[in-house]
Length: 273
Image (tube, rainbow, N blue to C red):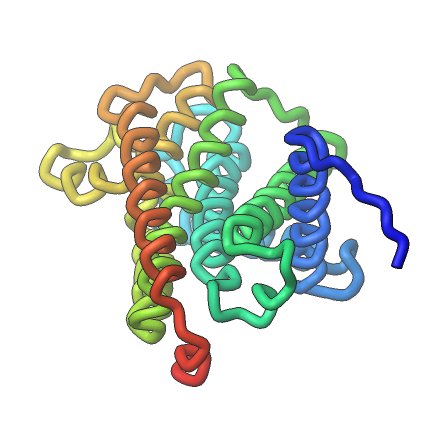
């Protein structure tokens, strides 16, 4: 009977949106495991397994001489960190709750919040995992020295946001062709095992092979990250402008596709997913 009305201001709405994104991000982080520490440890172990596998690969084939002169572990980590960050962002955003998800039944929830929280949760886990691994290597093994840490971090974020752009495109396809979207996500992630260029540097590739990787924004981000990480490596065949341009285009295309799918969404689509 009696009620009080609160004036809704832009600032209050912004705070409510940030709070909702935080809650949704926390939910996504806890999806991997009920205990967040165990989930973080599992994520770190995936990186450790990658490092061990590539270390063995280089040792068996005798390819260690093709790496950048300097810290070999840092060379491996600089590629694996960006590769996993990009791939995890693609998977998280492409599988974010769509317009027909049960979460959309709650009034404050919308697809923008679902996409943002999925992207931020993957960034949070990968950033924390990378920081912990670098800390352990620095303390327990040998000092980690990065020539230009700000630039390396910027490339790390560029790998993440480019993954968000790719994931948005796959998410926009999912309401209409769920099986195709899932297959494309898997194929893209598997192709990046080689196409990302985390096992080699662009300066050592002949032009005939370089054109096979030059299309990939992650390839540019990883090569540029190594240029910022190592004082004696200067990337000559890659740049950071290309992945930025591709990322902006992918995000715009993905958002337009998601908007179109949301406007034509039907609850009956859930049965086909």
